[in-house]
Length: 163
Image 1: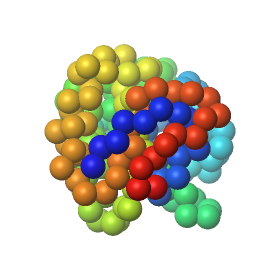
Image 2 (image 1 turned 90 degrees about the vertical axis):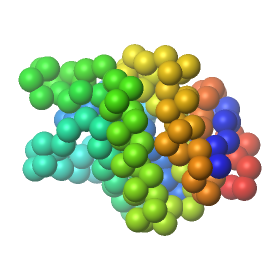
Image 3 (image 1 turned 180 degrees about the horizontal axis):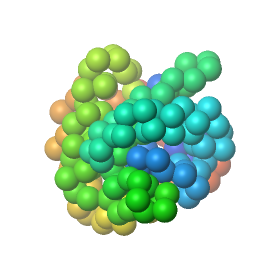
């Protein structure tokens, strides 16, 4: 069940937060930066995973931290390999594929709720009018509540139904 909400995703009561990144992403902009600052171990573990597995765009990686924190890094952008560490732009195919991986993780891990930003529209450079239908297609039929943060309001907790 998709629920568009307004607020600060970092204040979400969802069990899991997902966000878009590139492989080897420096996580120095947008939501990735906020998550990096809040969970520095996630950033370190993500780089270790990237160096070990050389993941391709269109995949997803789940990180679990202290206190039950769970973050899914969706590789919606081309990686920092060979780009001087700078992430490339997102593509519709990468978003589609990463969301397919996310749907598999949701089933495997039995997530109870998920928060998702306006995926791939900031640093990724895609239009929300392109990304929203992909989210609807890939995640709309799932039974868990998925809070899609369509508007960002710093410090404001969203009204998350069923949460």
